[in-house]
Image 1 (tube, helix red, strand yellow):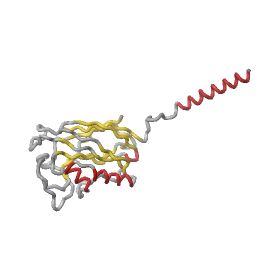
Image 2 (cartoon, one colour):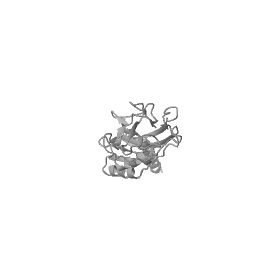
Image 3 (cartoon, one colour):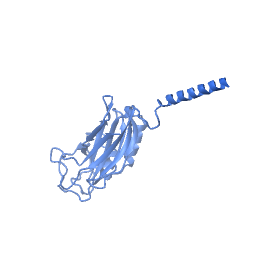
Image 4 (cartoon, one colour):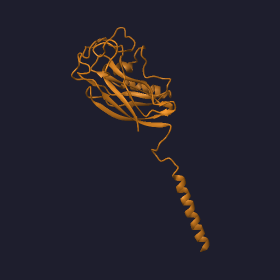
Length: 227
């Protein structure tokens, strides 16, 4: 009986010892220093007050599309010709060709995942969504069509969320406003006028969005908050 009591005490000690070890095991969904989750707020700031020149009554933005990627790849490059995916996104808001292009980049290991979210129903609407980024694919690029427009879009380019070996806590990005160089329309509701020849992607500075030097204020912002 005495031996049985001792054996019972030993078993209890082992069980408590295992319980203490379990406390040090990261639970599912726990903090992982190699990843970080961000809430992204896409906020439209485009109104008849902010940009009165030829302001369209049905202002809105197409669905967001982009990727998390490494430093040595890009979604697009200024001063180069637009891919078919960028062209379709900028002219119609369509995602299909650009989705395929991003999936091709993912297959090379230079991007981690596709980001595809909704758009903004008006020039001043807002959406929120979450992404989880890894430290080896810590760059984020996003695009969204300015609509209606001939071929204009906003872009967050190569934003590094893991800078100097630390996760960025909270940052608001003013996107760049681009013309994809594929349509010659000069105002929001211009009829289709395919560029022939097409020209390189360039930053918008002229009216109706710009003042000749820049677009100010921006038509949207993107806020990244670590959660």
